[in-house]
Picture 1 (cartoon, rainbow, N blue to C red):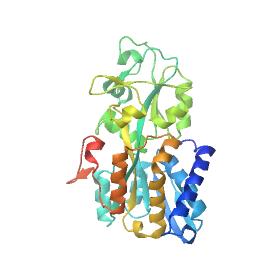
Picture 2 (picture 1 turned 90 degrees about the vertical axis):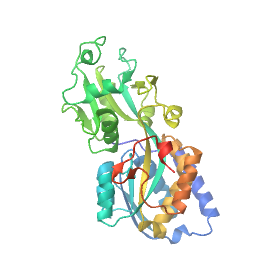
Picture 3 (picture 1 turned 180 degrees about the horizontal axis):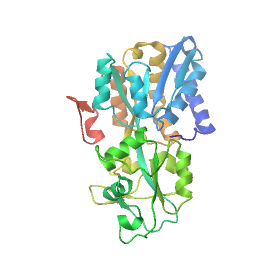
Picture 4 (picture 1 turned 45 degrees about the horizontal axis):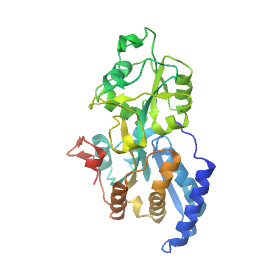
Length: 331
């Protein structure tokens, strides 16, 4: 998916922070760093990484950093065979990806960087969907599911639903599939799919009978054109997406965002400098770009894990994905 670039105000704030870091860091001469760093993966994480890389390149001009957007799954395919140093991910690494990395003798460091949430969006003039359950979302997006709004709820109008979705190789779709359709679920074949969030916004904002989903940050940038639908999860309470409901994990469709760093690459000065620069800027930058910062206690753990170069994932054990709240699992 394609997100808009950070604003010039963000750039100015970053330049100020960079100069401060460069002045205070007596152990690293950024100007002397050289080499190449390849990054690929999630388009959701891309705006954060892009901003970091653009500003890092101003003080480490001899380091060539490239950032691809092949989706979380596509990024991990490259990362787990050693093609990239850093992988952007909008979900934790999976057991099959861990196994692929092990086969290729790739060790890695797992770094949560922010929270995001999937916003379910409809046209502003859609006046019948006041809230929606996970089961209703499943009925809309599943293969063989309801074709009209009335099929989903008898009180809703008998008009055809137009369903929009991010690309099926994106981490956003992966997360939605697992959270809504189930691991074995299949999506409806007639939904309109695009890797470009702008296409999804245009589609939903131009059709009163449309529904779509994408990251909270992108909804916030387009809330004048769309309406976010409160989601009813296992609590039975309709919850709207916001920084507060994502932080306390009451919003049913919230998720952590990550970068994964190749263990051997982390020993290279240019990679270490980039990751440390990333973490130094993480809290402020995440907010400026439109995502939700990690709680301070979690961010402290992230810094500690990076300093210790803690290898492996906290979300896979004995070849199986560990289920549970992020705040309970990450240590």
